[in-house]
Image (cartoon, rainbow, N blue to C red):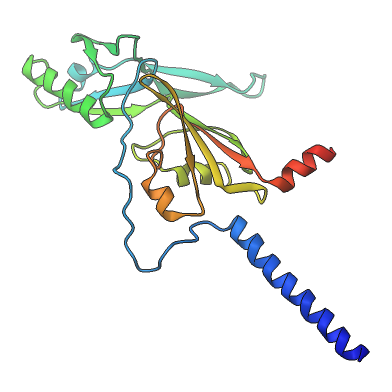
Length: 244
């Protein structure tokens, strides 16, 4: 009788452990509704468009180097390290950039004011190239535009919170979280908030990383400059904080 009772208690303990592990797995797993081999519909790609106070570098190249240099800002050298008798300061070179003013314009050499707000990198490059050709300034220009000060912030329950640089046109929320070292074990997968500056003020969005359908359909699947991503802590972290 005692042996039978012992087996019953052991079986109940195993059931509790099994369901407990299933429950905890659900709390930390991503993409729980994902179906293998099925093509998911992703949100329409949202490219980065330049806004006032953004900074970009614009470089013009052509066969006539001296002519194209008239349209390029100077290269600035920055010192790094300390000087000593045995070694000289090293320096890094960086291309100067254009800061977009409150009206959405930049002051481009020779051409003058150019409106760039609301344009993508490719559109800015095409616009300046068109001006150079139509105004008969450069016959064969190659215009390259790069982001300089664009970034986003990741806060809350991630391993490496901080501000990160946007280095390409289509950066996803998963890219951003990966750059921050992924969520900690205490981060709620179904409570990731994105704060984004809209035309009429700050807009807040909620993203559920445990649902692939929710993630892919979200309007914030693609990151924009100055986004703030916040991962909410779970109840375990909250209890730890209360005890401390």
